[in-house]
Figure 1 (spheres, one colour):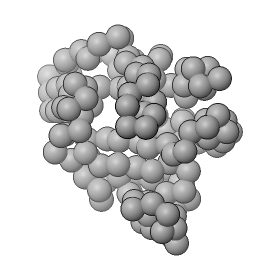
Figure 2 (cartoon, rainbow, N blue to C red):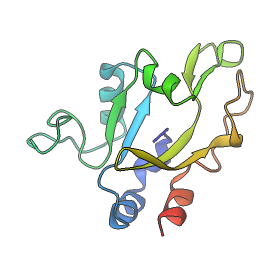
Figure 3 (cartoon, rainbow, N blue to C red):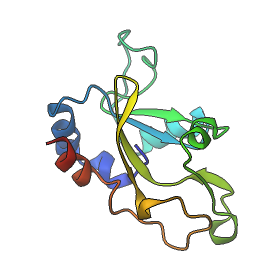
Amino acid sequence: WKSSVSFFQEQDVIRDIKGLGVDDIYCLSVNDAFVMRQWGLHLGLAEEKSSSASPLNPGNFQQVKVLPDGACLFTRGMGMSCTWDSERGFGERSWRYSVVINDMKIEKLFVEAGKVIQNSGPDPFEVSDATTMVKYLQ
């Protein structure tokens, strides 16, 4: 899930999504594992300390698993790579989107503005939000 601080603070939304049959929620970002871990801790996500059910745990978080895409390989593969060098000085990043992956197939993809925009002035957050996802899953 391309992120928003408010999403992680809405535990009811996380419960709603999981209650609609979603096994796991992931947040992918073009960052390294150290940044992703510190970001999760800063947001107050509860750490997973003992689960062996998932290869990502222990060492990740209970409700939302954070996935680093430091080299932008997954993001490029999804066609979601964008550069924000002139607007924000970020260089290559991921455009904001949310996706339902069901049995290793993309079931539904919500892309902000309907397409990837390079050096976008605004950072839209209208269709990749949790509310849109919950409505779709219902």
